[in-house]
Length: 160
Image (cartoon, rainbow, N blue to C red):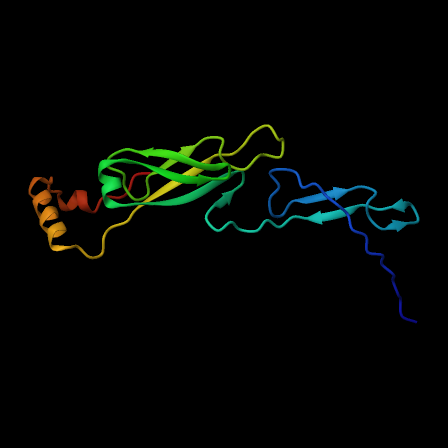
């Protein structure tokens, strides 16, 4: 004789605490199916969807931001998104691809509710693919004063 089980479907409202992450579980005691010993526990397995622009690493978030060549060379102020809204970040002259800045307290709230992670802003310098004749002339003029680098300097191992 086949074993049959009857399940009653109940809607349960759950407050998801700040800071939960994929792989965490929430246990709601007494909210599960009833058994001989009374109601059991309801377990909720958390799976957090990816964000279109932020990458999460625990309580910290990472964001890639592109800079124009002018912004990287001369410095600028760029407006970037955070989880709490837009903020302005000053970039010093001479920014390089791979440089980063940390905005403290702009990450994900921790489960203790008292602290937040940080937001790491990773900069990428966008090099122009096509130059106008004037841009080419200006770069050639710039190159006249540029410091020449040796082959040793050109092929150094990156220091982190």
